[in-house]
Length: 344
Image 1 (cartoon, rainbow, N blue to C red):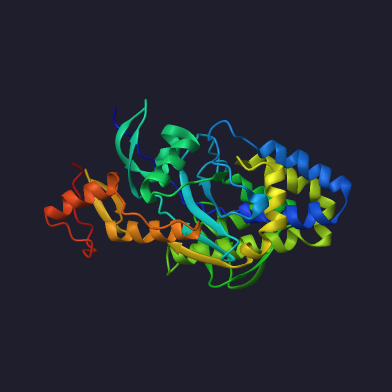
Image 2 (image 1 turned 180 degrees about the horizontal axis):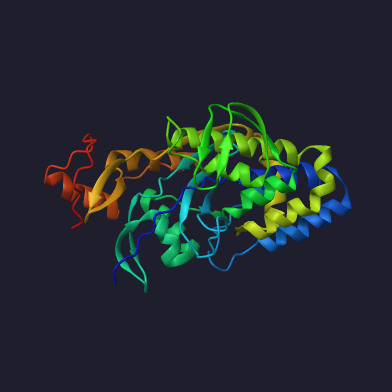
């Protein structure tokens, strides 16, 4: 079967930290009624059927990992399943008092074996073919690292949450317009509603720093959401906030586990290191992919495993085997002119 490719815009959605902080501050500080409302809403997000979690003893503050997935559906009229254009592997180590976030580019070379299609694919399509389990298994294989939990959010989640907290304040670094959402942004302070915040967080092509600038704006929006969520004025919209989370988020972390994280891991969440898998653009069968070298895969594997208190181990997977075969035929990872990469 021929794999179908669709050109998608690239959302960057990281609301997992918002859920943790909201639980920590709101459920823990504003009484039994709100605590009960939170429990009901969070229960709606729980799904342990698609991916059986590798349970960690959180009460004993053991290190754990969670894969954050943001789908490219749920906004701009999209209703199809879509792909996980955002994939972030997070490790949390309370003993080291550190959280590490590792971004995996959506076009990373991967291999899928499913009833729909078997062969080379981009890693963001693992979800399309094999649901959340496919995405989790792909990351596990790529870095030889256990993935304990997952959190999946659709693109409409960001828009709904911003509206639920009454909008967010940002500082626009430069003036620009978004042809996809008809959003126009003027340099300087701005208050954004949900639709505007979504456009602000998603734009990439008009930014002179590309994806890096988009990540910075996304972080700015998330920080503004958290600030608003924890303000007293948001309490009047608390039910709407929690319902928006329930409608847009799925995770195999239970309410009790989330409460434990909010209580026991708070310091670790305050000390965050960000990293990403570095790759080069290459053509495979006439299509553009991002290809990581074996050395880079090993670096990220060591980083992720170290974040869990595990020793590094030499990688031996689909990517490293294909890399070895390409290296024998002269493929050069320092070539920035989109070289041809052969799948053997």
